[in-house]
Image (cartoon, rainbow, N blue to C red; front, top):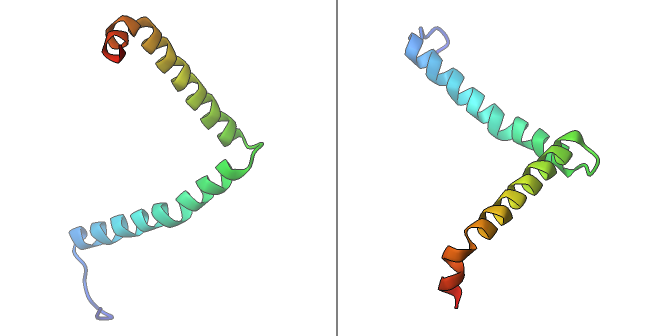
Length: 74
């Protein structure tokens, strides 16, 4: 790149978007992984609650709809 190059608004927007994507991909992802790897962290507890509730709702749904899928198994 030339030292005195004048950038257009679109070029600057694209540069900023690319840098933000890079930051999110590298730094934020690393921090989230670090938070989730700690067994006592609030984030991990929250993820566990979400997964537990999701599986509970799935089991409830399958039980309610067992008449539909049960006949396919036999």
